[in-house]
Length: 290
Image (tube, rainbow, N blue to C red):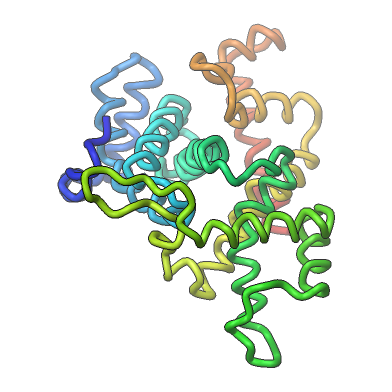
């Protein structure tokens, strides 16, 4: 449970003091959780990565929602990641958990930021979470040096619509909604505390060019990149990967286990693990080539 906002600094300070795990320790704890259902091991994995959630939550302060709530949702994603983490894949938990943490925070923002009513399709959600960084990048590249211009030109609207696969009018509407967020709309006032309007929590570092590029790369990997990599697999391998790793919005029971899939295909759990490992290797190669 995340403390009240008044104790947020104390919470952040506490999680930053928690010891980080070495790869050997992480692997041992993850195996204990997977093979023995060791909840104490799960707790250690979660606690050692709480600082990651705090770091990710700062990237979304510009949407005007309390950081304590963003951290709470991010922690849910972290716990889901720990539950599904397989230490045999050669990937550190920090990399695997990043997607789950962001997925939970994205859902929370879309459900609670009242102005956003058009982000209902996958493409529109992508537009919502990328418009700010893309707009900032276009302003930085402007030949006329007009970096103070707030609205997009028709050419910029067309370019953004094409890149994100949405209609130009959707770009214009989303820009209007996001621009409106810079005004203190329905601020929360609690015992004299500062109100939470979007303008009050815009993170300046988010517009730094390297961060913009990194954000675009992550968005591509999480959408088009995953689809491209899955297309490189045969039907059985694809289903195994999807059932094991891509059930982001499933229920609390999580994706299928190696034994579940072994029963479906009439082979051993070890054979399913081998197919899975080969499929992931093939996906990495497809992504590298792309």
